[in-house]
Amino acid sequence: MIEDHFSHPQRHVLKMEGEGTAAVACGSCAMFAILPKVAGSFTCSNCMLIALLKDKVQQLEERVATLQRIRELELFLEATEHTVSTKEETGDSPEKVASSPTQEPDIWRNVTQRSRRPRVRSDCLEIRNRFEVLSPSMEDEEQTPFEDLSLITVDQVYEDEQQRQSSGNVQATLERTAHRRTPTRPKRRRVVVIGDSLLRGTEAVICGPDKMSREVCCLPGAKIQDVTERLQGIIKPTDKYPFLLVHVGTNDTASNSLQKIKRDYEALGRKLKQLNAQIVISSVLPVERRGPGREGKIVEVNNWLRKWCKQEQFGFLDHGMQFLEDGLLASDGLHLTTVGRNVFAKNLRNLIRRALN
Image 1 (cartoon, rainbow, N blue to C red):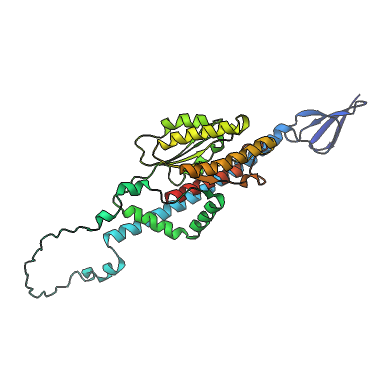
Image 2 (image 1 turned 30 degrees about the vertical axis):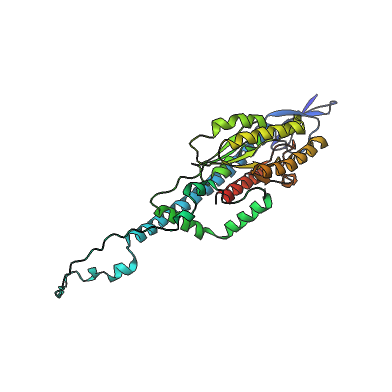
């Protein structure tokens, strides 16, 4: 026997006597579903997904509106800077405008006779720096790194970032104005970040400050040998002392022995030395729930990398155990979450800024 229940205005129930099941209608789309027992209001999975998508779309619209407002403010500030710099270059200052004789254009003035003496032009003097021999050549200055990056920790990179942000936007505005007034800009050094799939999604943070001269080369599933083979096609002969940051080794620790990993790194080092570039090697990030053997192997690889980079005069970025904190590693214990990827990208970006500046 089938009984109709209309006690709830948004839910219709058809109950089968003796079986303990009921056909319950969704309160949103009125579609029926067979449930073991009748509870409160029922919403089907499709309606729940639609509601979730609506919330996501609303959040995205709010973020787009915020970005548009920020972009409008940036354009306004750039236009104001350009106007101020143009007035300073042309010399149209308020004092000069106030002191100009254009306030009384219709008044005649008596001009006394002045003796015009011919200007005597002196001969051109040859100016020479007699200490020029003692100064290093320009070519040597360009190929000498500004800072020793033999061992850089994440804490040092973070402190540099805090000091840079504390200087405020005034210094950044002055630097942009100075670059605009400079008639010729020197060619910027090319920056290449190459590595495995952990670099996926970091290009926006790393390349944001200079999209023309920075690039991220992500090779999903790559091992040390794969990066060694791809270097020749990525670094061009026309690149003048580029900056190369390598992050690889996580996939090697899954199947290769410690001796095999060392040999692959040594082959990579021989290839890197042929490129005439500034090299920095990033340490292998820790993993979770992959067995004590692999976790211990990563620690041994990083300890050996630190000594090997110092011996080969490569820079070394030590991430330490920072990514073992909650919320940085994904559920598989290998890849990074969105927060972890953002932290990883900022560490690489700050290192690049420190090396170039």
